[in-house]
Image 1 (cartoon, rainbow, N blue to C red):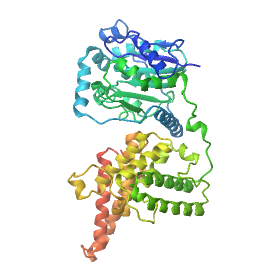
Image 2 (cartoon, one colour):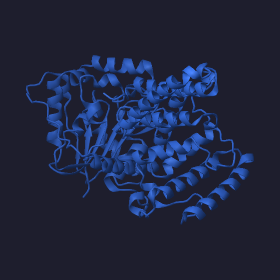
Image 3 (tube, rainbow, N blue to C red):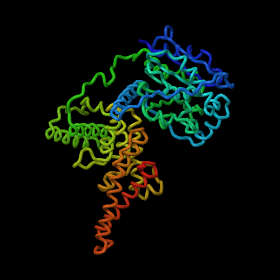
Image 4 (cartoon, helix red, strand yellow):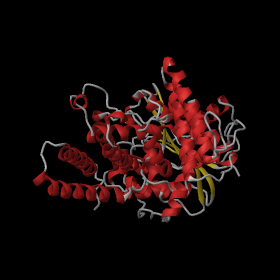
Length: 500
């Protein structure tokens, strides 16, 4: 059944039907059929936004169903697979960077524009607008939602109020200001949309590198399950986005399917029976393979030699069935963000060919982690999230004097200079930071374990200090470890990750 295409316009004069011609022509350009024969709907609400309305509706109620913890995990996994498929087809995730001036000025300007101000600040206007949009939806069946500018904020409100029979096979937002915090004041969007929704298959946001309305960044920092793609040089007008090959390919894929014959990973690969020990071994070998690809040429031969010996040893000891380079067991591509988190952070802080010494640069580790995240079927931004979390945790917990002086870019400390307590603290704090960034459930055991370990060390120090040299190795080691744990706990507190 071909989905219904619903378009939500922004403000200004774009509420006519010019959008349909732009999208149809762009679809043909990228190899899809046009929109002839497609049920296209574009609810009109310019007067509702511009003037006080005679309509008196209450705000439509939230319809998003509550899901259990296990169901939430399955839902996340499904959306993560779909998002990874879209990224492979359309381009790499690009969230952009915060632009402080834009973060303040864009919401302020939107609240000066009458139509935007009325929707963002007036509950009656928001209620009337959403009722018009809901009335235009089909009673049931698959829907592709396409939205521009203020229409993307309306779309965000709509997603949690969908009728039970609607299956949202794709959400495509373009030129969205929804990444800016000021747009959401007085709204529950940030809370309601931090997790994937059962009725939404995937959400793509496209932002322009010359579009100030977006704040020059995407929206995934507010809605972590969204895939952001940047179009360099694109300005805000609707036709610049809807006429782009990226948006056309996304709309075409949602309406008609893939142009190619490839299957999604979840369809094409069966899951083999391997245990956690084998899984960790395959991840280690795969990470080492990608590290080798990013090493300088003069280091590669020796590193690959060490990798060959490591692979043979693991294969013999564990009975691994896949000796490829890299190994390709299907289960690695069924890992979710949650289940991949700690193994990937552990890999990023280890020497994958130990006990053979090898100098691995921060850049090689970063690029290998990025490649591994993509290879196991997660979106590329996940590798960057882990890398940034490691850098933040490392510089907060075990800073060098160079870090304190800010004489170099922020990056994780070299694992070789860290002791066991520092390595563990950095890994678990980085995991909590990454969970927070990706909208995953925090692990309540982390803070409790840190606090317990700190208390035990303080008791040990108090017991030993009266009869020990304060400058001796035992007391100095305990002081160092206490500083490490104190820094880790302070980092969690500053990020709002302490238990409430």
